[in-house]
Length: 151
Image 1 (tube, one colour):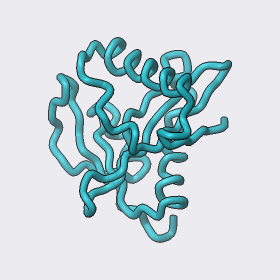
Image 2 (cartoon, rainbow, N blue to C red):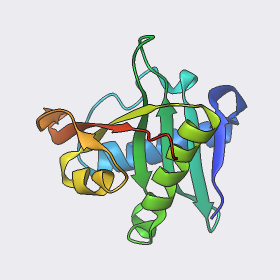
Image 3 (cartoon, rainbow, N blue to C red):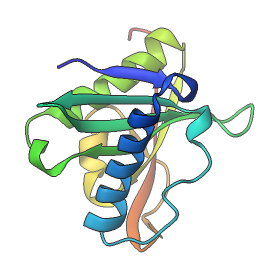
């Protein structure tokens, strides 16, 4: 599987439209969670996705820290329904971690994971750093990965 990574300026209008459409499809419609999906951060993010059969199958974005001493994070992780349970999520998170560590030199990676996925994220080395809390009506937990020098 090949992964595409582009910053906001590199995205075509069609790619941006597809990204926003798929995020709304999964996070707003499928999860029945009306919230402002377009959050004003996309312009500063690195967007990662893969296509299968001419369709976007998986997507995430790498979000830079808000503050100088903050952490980069992986967010908006999604796998379209027809492509789930095929190992694509694991491949994508590994790819995003590699980009952050190998290309960007990041030492700590954060994410806000849905609570039911915390064991999945823990399998990469993310540790819970918050109690479970509701975000837009969905249980989440903050997680952090300290990158080991050997990676």
